[in-house]
Image (cartoon, rainbow over all chains, first blue to last red; front, side, top):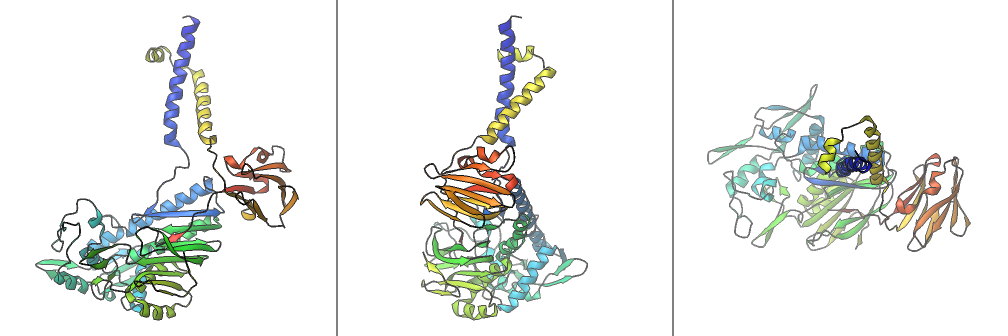
Length: 363
Length: 140
């Protein structure tokens, strides 16, 4: 074989291997960022100091955060195999649950009493009845339950039938749910059922108004483990934790369709949660119907508060309280918050007036 | 032609070395090739504690005098119990250079540029970090 033929053979062989490597390498790239989603909502964070993006501790932190998110989704998401979904379909009287599930229920039990029902996780059927479950936002919605309504031409729905509002409100008596510990964690399901037009319904739970805050309570342990010194962490955009310095936190404008800042408040080493009637709602005959259901009436809240922000040292409490305050209305909310003197609040009312226990600045 | 030569050229032991070298070269290209990003400022941290910060836009510098001294025009000395690093702030190019240090024989930090990433002096636990505009937290 002549020298040129040998060289040719060598070159082609090496070049082909190099080409394969170059094309394959992106598949094994390090520091691949992965989207973290808690109950379908993004979890984001920013670290100012302490852990450098791209470093091994940073990647380890993200890995741990992903693990925590997977654990929470496995308990609280609406996916068929989640713990809460299995609970909602379980016909037995007593159900064994995880420690996280038990803890969230225990906090809800306490606040259900203290807020006189302004927060109530046993309203899942009402949330679905009023059109705020996930299936309504998915393409290809069609009625599958007797209480479902056809879509109107404008994409909306007519109001639900009163008989279902009354029936499902009767299933929302959260005081009948009991929890206890006995070499494990258990919940005694309320023996509640209603029959409408020959179909029987049972009470179901929706813990969404606590999960993001509780997630942050646990997530801060991850950041502490990796010694993040200044950071903020957001679960779904409505619950946050800000640590390490005084942050200028913006509160979203509830009167604008763009997610722009409206107020600024200084926060350091605290959890913040915001609930509002602007987040998920629809208009029907000039009336706004919000996803925040008042378990006492069985209907979307008619409160004058459009946005309630609570600031404090517990993620789960700020999350649940922000929802409770919206249901209470301004006067009751201000009175109620006197029982939480270490917590601050910012209430934005429908007439654009402001009620706050902390200094805020208009942007 | 390519297919023919691949068939005619059986795999030999010596080829492993060639492939490894090529793989490392390509990997190095991925890991080291960076995109210079516009830096709006910088911070210097000793063992995770911020001791200095500067803004390239308004050419301002703040520092903790317990650890940082100004020793010349745009020249600062950062000192800890582990040693010292002298840095020069290149305001024109939004860059920082370590011009002198006692961190050992390799002095790798003196070859780094803020434009390519963080400047790290591992023996002194010093990190000089480029600052882009910090995101604003917003809730609701």
